[in-house]
Image 1: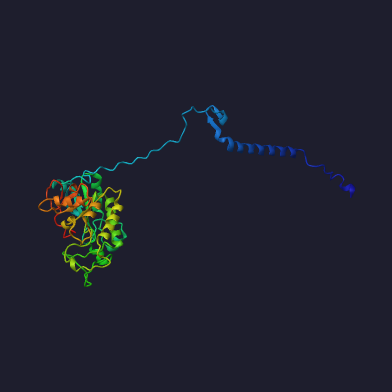
Image 2 (image 1 turned 90 degrees about the horizontal axis):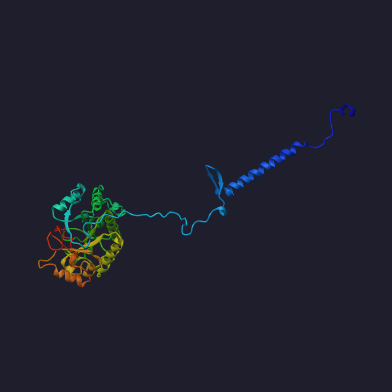
Length: 361
């Protein structure tokens, strides 16, 4: 057996020397790879590739920047395009011409105001029935079904506001609202016998005590301000003062102190309109301005504090008595803040409004 395999096998003398050289080459390549990665990570941000070749800009090799020339990020200044100025600032005299929503939608409003010799228009945006002349975003308006069919009037108002040629006044019937009364929101007001009360024109009223009613009216007025109206004229801004008011029941929604809930409403609305640039005005009757009635809850003091203007029918003897009553209540520049109903061309502000359906309070 020994002789048979003597020439076929040799003793083992270890691996060949070439394998050690291969290992050394692999190690060197790995070291070069690691070095390249470190170079890119650590020094890569200091490498600059130029037409002349690769340049290494190490921090200690750079020249210091001259004093007073520190490099900073650029400052971006944001500016807003100023809103167009109004042709009739709130405390200047106005000649307000009553127009219908249809006239606004037809685009003839500005011409109608000019032909009547005025510089302002007034349009009923919320009527006695509760119907709106625009599509409100208020959920309450959708529930009541009082929204307009389209947005033509709102677009016309926005266009006029953008042009800035006509002063814009929105009429808003407040607590005299058939839709709210029918839905049982904040009313209706009741008689002492437990029946629904109607005013002299056959309309029902809701209560200024109701938070739901006050919030709803505030929502609507804010939308009108955002639409572009310069002034909001409140009608029926308190409890009813016309008709057989002696049969009205004194109850939780018509307390003995009626000025407190009315003031709460006017204060809430004033705060909501703050910063909009929209003037809040109130339609008032003679007895309200003179402070001789207690039915509505409106007082000369409330007019002085919250009304930018007071729209009222001036007596035959002139406006002096009204001016004195409002000034005594604390109103500054009372003469300039009166608007005469009925189109009488006085030295002050006037409007062609002469029939508000008994809405005077």
